[in-house]
Length: 211
Image (cartoon, rainbow, N blue to C red):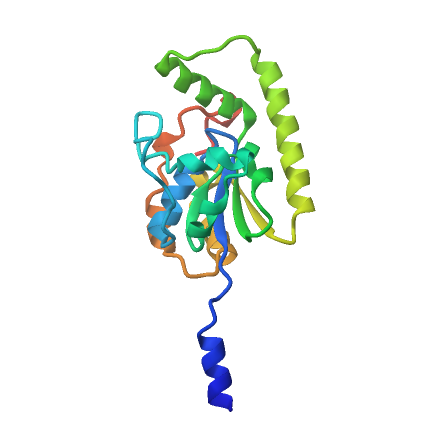
């Protein structure tokens, strides 16, 4: 009888989590995806958007993520045990039928705006219809709304906030927190090796000596 019970439980699929890396655009989400990949969690990406000077280590994007607002989420079944990059504006479209571990990247809004503007300039896509002050206010309001959503959906969502600025300054302790949050089996030395402070190119003036 005991052997039969053990056989039943050993054959049962363990509950998996989808590991989501989120945050505002240009907040270090691609860097975190790279860290998790070398740490041992394979990314879910279609490689349609290739590396460039703005993201020399790649974007780690999956195009169908953009279809979440249209109810296209069946593909999430293939994301169990993998990492998926989803910008914060799309988080509330995630179906409650899955469980998520979210690493939420935080970065000074002024730096996000500066990085985004430089990227758009290089692509010839600058839009000046909204001032930096208005955009900053919109981003801060959005981040508060995202914070509220995370609090309301704790049944199927757990979240660890990670400061982009802090992890570039002293990655070790934060990598340890990430490892604990994700189950304790990551290659923390490999993760540390891909943190590259030279990519921190749009820092706020009062943070010039932070790293």
